[in-house]
Amino acid sequence: MGRSLSKTALGFLISILGSVSFGAYILPRKLSRLSVLEYQFWLSLVIFPLCAIAAVLAGAGISLSPPMLGLAVLCGVLWTFGSLSYSAAVDNIGVTRSTPIKNMAPVFAAIYGILIFHEYTLNNPASLATALGGVACMAIAAYWIGGAGAPEHEKALAFNRARSEGERSSSFRRGILFSLSAAFFYGAYSLPLKFLFKHNVSAYSACAWLGAGVLITTLVILIFREHRVAPKFPGSREFLLAQSAGAIWTSGQVLGAVAMFYIPMSISWPISNLGTLVAVGWGVLLFKEVHIEAHVREFTLGLFVYVTGLALLAFAAPAGHV
Image (cartoon, rainbow, N blue to C red; front, side, top):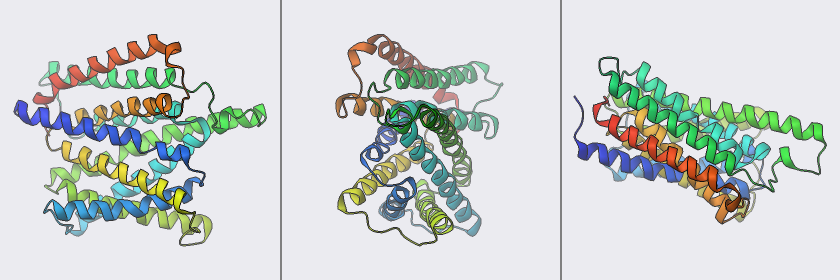
């Protein structure tokens, strides 16, 4: 049985708000000069405390049974590998070229939601087709707008003219592979997260231990790779950049998790592709990377497909099973 339209509308609104954070959190990385792992360390320090505070304020607490706690920590482990991959992709090919590829993650999550959690089935082929059509539109639109938003004066490694052609080509390949890796891990952590919700674990409690998983995984990787527990303090500027990225992402993660209680994962995660508009908007307005007048056709077409995808997801959402 479908949910009420009011719950569907609320789930859509929460997902859209979360997508703004998901689109914005990577942008401080563009201003940072830290290595990928150092940046991840300082970013991870803020996620667990903020998620734990949110859980306490929401009255959910952070007490979970060992199996559920383990799954929540696993979410953080998978997300950390996605985050490291995304940061590395940005270093190699830039935000606006890596983001559209990374945004394949919601497509993976939608497929998981349909195939594993049976949010949509062949018993209602019209709703299934509408949901898949909406997912496809969001993915295509993200790719088009991201491609149109690729900076004319990109400073990422793959486009740095101070490097040899071979070095640039190698960085480009690495950037694509890191972007695909980010898509895989960002999509994969939706599986244990959805399983937790199926077993009545609060979104706030799950996110708290997800944050702990992020911190633990980052520390383990740092110890394994660099044989130290923490990097040298990078100065207030770099510290605040990483902390702001962690705080922005935390708001998006909590909102995205809460949305999954109102609308199916196969709907809420593709909506996060709206974050591409945020990333490209920053590239245009703040970093002056893109001459928007040269890409009016691509942006217009991409926005039309975005709106079409959102409309299809809206029509499909009430018939899905959370």
